[in-house]
Amino acid sequence: MSPSTTATHLDDLPAPPRPGEADAFDEVLAGLPAPPRARRRVLGVLLTAIPVAALFLAGQFRDDARYAMAPSVALDLGDGRSADLASVGPDRLVTVRATPSMAGAVTYSRLLWPGEHLVFPVAAREGAPLYVQVSEDGARAMARGEFTGRLTQFGSSGGRYAGVGAYLRGTLGAPVQGTTWLLVDGATPRRNVWAPVLASLLLAMALSDLALLRRLFRRE
Image 1 (tube, rainbow, N blue to C red):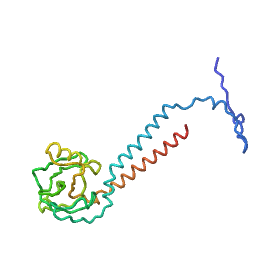
Image 2 (cartoon, rainbow, N blue to C red):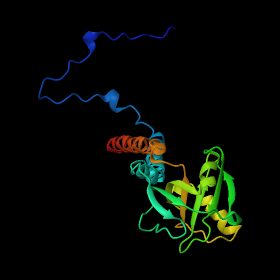
Image 3 (cartoon, rainbow, N blue to C red):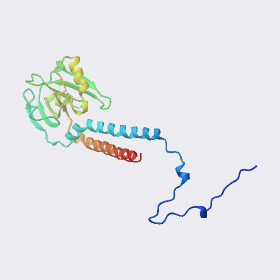
Image 4 (cartoon, rainbow, N blue to C red):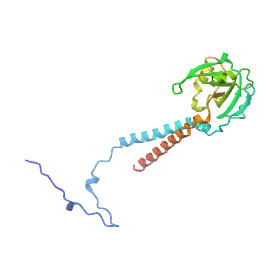
């Protein structure tokens, strides 16, 4: 016995309700199963994790974004042995004349920042210690004893220099803390123009995901 087929014509469909009248109760649609809640919960977890991660990463670049908007004219601090760094503050382009103390120097490299970097303390420094980082293109600065770059701290800049600071403290016994000053030679504000752009993209991503998350919970 062949299965019977029921054809549905346009004339059999109910007409839409008139303006102001309630829609007819559709028993077929009411009998459909509700969408799975597990899938919605997984989507909610993902939409929550993405903005949290984006906001965390944007926070890591806040020092870089602030330095990108700093004045491009270097502030001359004079002799590095007695320069008052606290009055200047971090994330400024400065010039310091100093003599390297190679006894406490260390060379390191980072995966995302190719090349080798030499970090050394300023010799005969009075007061809070000052370290200088020179990259491979800083041979001229070493020769003339004058360094121009970003004044920061080992614990700032998203923790980018925290590893070398921990090595100096743990291995060499140097008095390096998170607030110890570090001058990154050759780092100008122009080289950090990527930071505000990247931070803005991360914030936009976080806001868009939060908007989707709000719409998802409003449908519950």
